[in-house]
Length: 177
Ligand code: 5GP
Image (cartoon, rainbow, N blue to C red; front, side, top):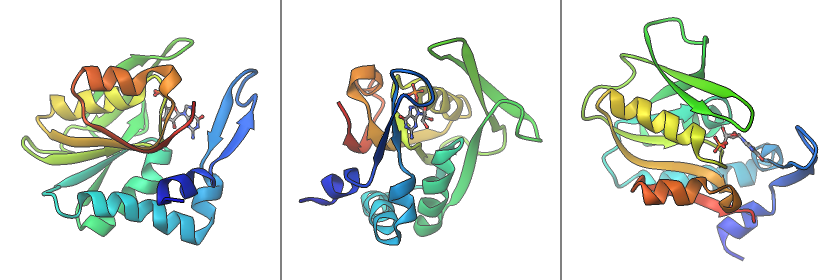
């Protein structure tokens, strides 16, 4: 069994949450176990440690958990991309569509500098809306997104495919059909 398959076994599926028909992929067991948490972080650390990375940007809220530890391990700074209304300083905002309605993510205008090489991280890619909104914010501030990364891809929801079609580099540890 390889690392990715082993870690996938620590993700819990909760049926009908947060609404009927949804199979929620719950990463808390993976984070709670010290060994799998370390294995997970190490996959990302090994992937980026040879690259010139200036910043890790994490998406609200589970992207903060893995993104901050990854940034610390790579000896680079961490930037939070937050849901609307949470950041105190001047922000740039990007709106995107959800199944029902819209959502907005924000980032501080001084969070990255033009030319900064950034890894953008979240826990899961479904439609790709959240990850692409974060990607657009970073691009608008002139950063170079080296790669977007997640623990889980849900191929049925098409986000990964959409991002590959747009030539947005994406790495995920595992996927659930
Ligand atoms: P997307 O924008 O790609 O449609 O949805 C991804 C976002 O929704 C991520 O920020 C992720 O945290 C959250 N999300 C949606 N479904 C799930 C799920 O089944 N499990 C987890 N852990 N997060 C989910």
